[in-house]
Image (tube, rainbow, N blue to C red; front, side):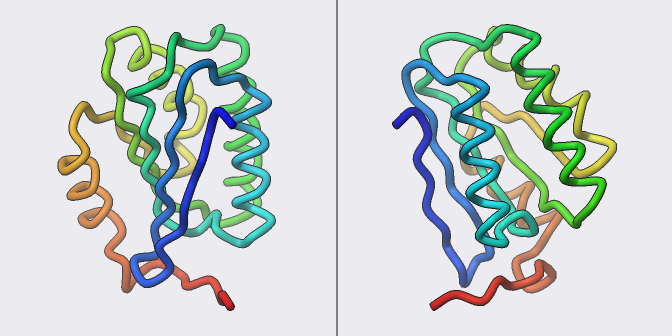
Length: 133
């Protein structure tokens, strides 16, 4: 699987990691699964440091538009995206432009800076908790 994730309920945080080739379908599947599970309000940290190449611009825009559509109808938690290259950062900026007005999205090169930003913009105790079993 191109994207894996785990949920840290006490921290109200989703940690997702992508590797190799990532498609719009992979990202949309991940987003749909998290939304179905009620995790859309949680803070998210996406690790894109191990993907092989940037997605085509049209695919990135599609994912951004879909995210913005969900954010229009519901509260959507902030997202920190960690990248390792300028090419991937450029693709993420396209996504960021499509969604930033709906929720905070920030690009980082460092995991600790990404986590510090999430803790600052959305402390865990201020994020709606999702019931889990």
